[in-house]
Image 1 (cartoon, rainbow, N blue to C red):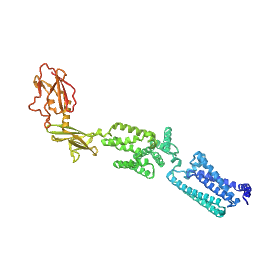
Image 2: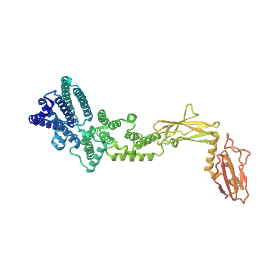
Image 3: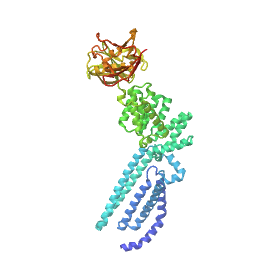
Image 4: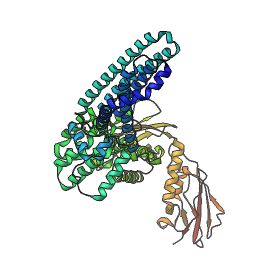
Amino acid sequence: MTTGDIGAAAPSLIRASLSRTGKWAGSVAFIGGAASDILNPLAPFAAYIALVASVAAAIIAIAIVLRLVLAAKALPALIFATSAAAVAGGVYGLQQQTNSQNGVIAGLVPAIAQVQQQLGIVSARVARIEQTVTETQQTVDRVKQSTDAVAKKTEEIASNQQQQTEQGAQTQKTVDQVKQTTETLAAGQQKQAEQAEKLQATTEQIAASIDTIAKGFAALAAQGGAIAEPKRPDEFYHNARVYELSGDMLNARRSYLAFAGFDVDAVDPYTRFATLLRVQDGKAGAREVFGQLADKAKALSIKLVHVLQFDDTQRLDKLNAFIAANPDFAPAYYLLAQEFSEDRLGAQSLSDKRSEAAALTKFVSYEKDGGLLKYFVDQRELADWLDHSRSRLTALGDVLDPARFAPSLTPMRSNAGWTISISLPEAATGISWRLGESGPFTDTGLMAMNDQRTGKPMPNPSFELPDSTTATIIGVKYLDLRGRETGPFNISFDPEAALQQGNKQILDQFWTSWIAFDASGNHGLVYFSQMLSYRCGIKAVRYSLNGTALDKEIKLPPCDKKDPYAIPYDYQPYFKVADSVTSMAVQVTYTDGTKSPVREYKRQ
């Protein structure tokens, strides 16, 4: 038969085949399409069937055209393959248009959806679903490879008619391979169905983003009341909160566990769940429950809340390790700040305050561009965290400025030597010092009284130095209220400058004693003994009588650094004035160049 004869006979052959094959082929194709739609939560079977059927139809059509098989025998198979491809393709198109992840039929017929639930087709273990889908995808890839092989063989048939018999055999072999691959795909789908029976929620629920969950939760919170048949994460969390508020802790616990099964990476539901567990089972019980959840979960929030169930030092160590491994997980910094807070510790050391402020500053920095929203289902909880962070940062002030909270020294010179008083920025349980930038430290010792801030003996805040001490560095360190060493701090000490500054401070503080008229019954004498005793801080003294002209000067003897407060035996600390003098004005110029206000003294 020639090609023209085949073309002439084709319509009659097709009609005959349709009359014999069309009914059962269409029925089988329709049943297959419905089955693939019902099984859609497991995998897009409609797409797979459409792909395989289209490939088979193309191969059969090519074989008929190239006369590799008899048209009369091949047309029923062609009609069946074409029908299957059309029905499956139509089903897949409807699924994509309606975005029906559970299938078009399940969306229209609630009974089918219930059947899916009862058969375990829809589940909540997305990780295992993804694994099985990956295996299925690999199988599809193998189908595609086989299809490419078929296309290659078909091209060879078209280019070399002399090898039609050999190519026909190869084509048949390829068709067998496609059939075998299809059987493999079916076996994989069966395995997938068996795995799906063990899962607990739908793929659509797992795919929900935290933003979607948060919006759903907010809407449910506005409505109030528990959801009778919760399915989505937001519904389970809503029910947990409702049950918790009503005192139904058993159902609250069940709802929290159901929410945790979705592996949603939001921190606030798990911190609330942990609080409930600690109340019911103690910290050990909460640690056990979250340990089991953390072993199975991928969500960092679950692992973080698990860390919080440990005790004190172990908890802090694990929290620091978590942050080191996940430096951009913002909620961890807020929870780290709580480890150093006044609420947690009762009394804070300066180091605690700095650690709290640093962690809160880091947490608040993520607020920019909504960077914290993705970690919270209940946005009110996030608002509380941010409000508390800002409030604490305001209370902590500029605690992170190291220059504002360093120890200081106040040297006081006596005729015997130096007394160095140490001022610390916080309560201490021990103080030590040294001269120079190296060498051992000397403890100042303890006083015979307790410091109410620490409940321990107060460390001596001063130490002595000989009058021969030259300019040097004094190192100071101390133990805070938790016994942690702070420092050392190196502070410059210049004896000459310290003597001048100390004298100036005393003169400024007790200026009313600079001048004394008619002291101790010595009428007509003006004494200036105090200025004389603290002259090491004075550069010049100007004065005037009965006015403020300051046209006179008191000549003071030079400073004796070895015995600075002694008055020379041959120097008179007074001068005579007439009875007409009723007042005296004085101004002191200090050794640092500053001047005192003009002080005026009335004669009594």
